[in-house]
Length: 456
Ligand SMILES: [Fe+2]
Image (cartoon, rainbow, N blue to C red; front, side):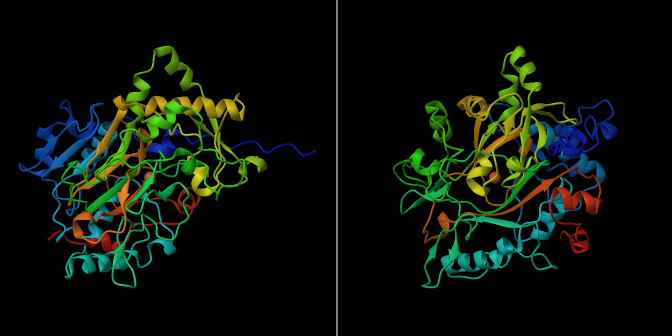
């Protein structure tokens, strides 16, 4: 009999968040409030302003008058990285998309973490295809965002959209990844596609994405006259159709739940105007009684990265509660039992000392706690926004979207970058090849071209 291999240790807070303890801005702000509007104006100019909180839990901050096409000084980067740590969602409104290119977007993103490379098969030609579709819808050239100067398409950029060109000249939706088979994302009618999968990006990996961000090129502007919303009525979602999809192997419906309250909460309050839906897991943790918080802080999960890892004993430990060492905020980390299973056949997590059934019941209850309306926020995007959210501090869910669109007012087009690892005050990033290969499953270095791109 061979001894089972020991499981991998949990990623430390330093591995997940970086080595900085306390806010970066402390080094610059002295005794002043490091994230005050006065400091924002001192750093970015008198036109800069802040608006928030955006959500009732107190998270979310919208910045005005901050030009993301400009290179950031270390002190400016410190302010913005800290703002994300404290506010969980930050928005840079009013970017001029005739000036802000995807190169500027990628450079800005590099400060927050190492961009997660997206498989070539997903990215190749997609930006071109979407731009072509926009041209088809509008009947004119010019509805496009400039590509990276060199290379023409970055491996970090991904499009989230409901437009793509088809051969007969009409335009229909494929969102967000045209060729992926994703049983949790379904056309629930001829007009609407929906998903009710609350998740954290790459949460099956030992180091998950620390941020996800969108540069918003198009957001649906059309509104139904009767309801005032983009979607005229709330789509009817059949839970069983979603979570017992015929493509899933028998007995493997991990995301399915018999908890009626959780079924209701996953679907309740989903947005009707293509907002990104969030649940604030910092607020959800803080709302628990002290004894419960202490209990959760002791809990360790065993998680898996690949199909079959549970059988092969190749798991790793992961705490249920994470603390951001810069902000000191504690968060319930991705309390969703089977989110990866639906998409990628990844085994669900197992809580130490609990059976599979007990783990599922426990995480279902915790997910339901986090999805209560009091912790929810549907974030409405606007053209020209650059929005960044802290993946560790929030759960998110795609909104229902219209498909088969034929007019620009229904188009949804965001460029997306997700990052991992330590934020950097200065560029280029200095991630070791070893770290990148282990945690990004690929290499990434800040392209020299994007460091040089001007802001004019
Ligand atoms: Fe996501």
